[in-house]
Image (tube, rainbow, N blue to C red; front, side, top):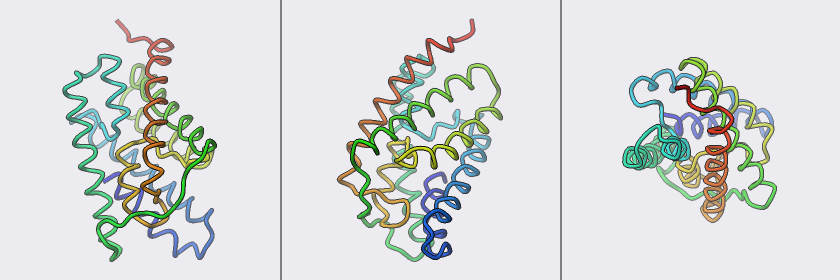
Length: 205
């Protein structure tokens, strides 16, 4: 559902924006932020609303879930992401999977992706330890909405979403060749945030 919202809104927005990339990005941002809030509220009490492998990794690092559960979450997240991009592409009469040609590489992009992922994981740790689900949903939606605009990478911050977006040559795409570096940076940002925010916001006894 999340990947479908990200990719589908990008496909819808690009032609409607008439070549105005800012308008297309704004539409894509609003749809993604709204979908995140809705989906976190929908699934929080079922699965903890794990949509992101680096978030699942962080919960395992900090002992909130077992490593076995985290790995299973990751497997399902990647499968779900692939289904989501296929669904978005097919809804707009495109091939289910077709490789993106959109270049997203270089130090500035990688730095932006580190900032996006570090902030997202840190926010989830800090807010979830002190507040209820509604606050987490609003916090994540607000952060990603802002990060779309304030990071050079437009805030992928999710390895499963990154791989899925390499399979659509549309507004939100990323070249398959650029995916490994993005995922490596996301992992680095997530691990750094896990240790930093576990120290800043310790678990309540």
